[in-house]
Image (tube, rainbow, N blue to C red; front, top):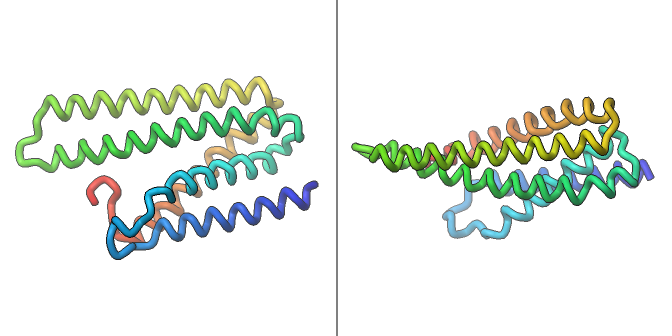
Length: 172
């Protein structure tokens, strides 16, 4: 079973790497990029995270079957909110680039951004509370370290891809 998990994990990591590499390429025109790539990349990242989490935390088959659907749902919701947050941040950036930004629009953007950040924090808390009930103390501690490391590495990789593209997601 362990060999199977490692093999599947390696395949998923390769798929995620290919997806991130493909996403980092600079296409000839934005309309050349298929719009359905985003959900597949998100699903692959969530699957990769859960598979790695299963390995790092040494989850039992029973724990995995209980955690997988709940954590998948929470991570998917968090991703969708993050997408809205990024769009709102871009809108704020564009408004601030105006010669005379409208203060009411800026306040509206800031209020929406605060609400979206609060929703993300609430989902993170819901995930942590759920995991506390399903994992041992040691597994919870490992999860805290794993989660921070996973997102740190993901952020570094995405930063490298953005730098290679030479674009800023908020201004381009």
